[in-house]
Amino acid sequence: MQKQARKQITLYSDGSSLGNPGPGGYGGILEYKGSRKEYFGGEEETTNNRMELRGVIEGLKLLKEPCDVEVVSDSSYVVKAINEWLESWIRRDFKKVKNVDLWKAYIEAAAPHHVHGTWVRGHDGHPENERCDELARNEAERIKASL
Image 1 (tube, rainbow, N blue to C red):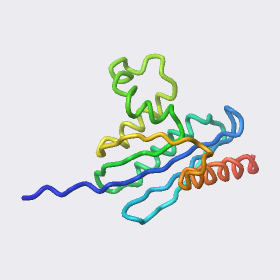
Image 2: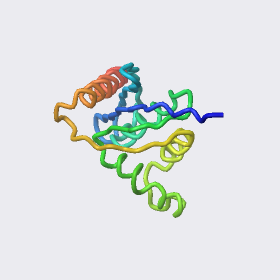
Image 3: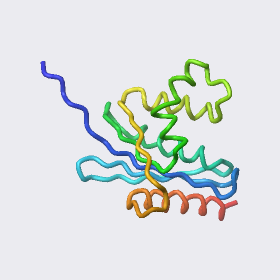
Image 4: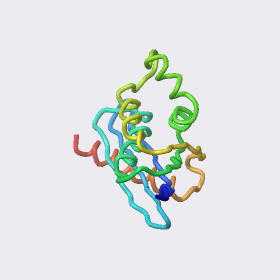
């Protein structure tokens, strides 16, 4: 029986916080062979880093089968953690690591997939990053207005 190749997914994500902490939002785009799905959400009291990470987690949770996922983010925190730091954090049982609850949720969401992070400069004209930023800011503003 031939092994089926995994789908190649690009997950663009961004987070926003109005105050740090404050109302925040995340926005993302899942892209596969030219098809796109946008998603967004937020929290009343959060930080920018939490929303950056939450955007990735929520995108991974939308995938219905194991995939090869390239996470594209302007958050060096998220990209470096995915590519470099996470294994040592796990070995150290997350000692002195912030947002442990979300990193554990990330590990669970990422488990079926092969995930790699790619950093892009924020607010530099990258169309998908700009759209994710817009989704995240809009959600943060919506939450702020509802408080």
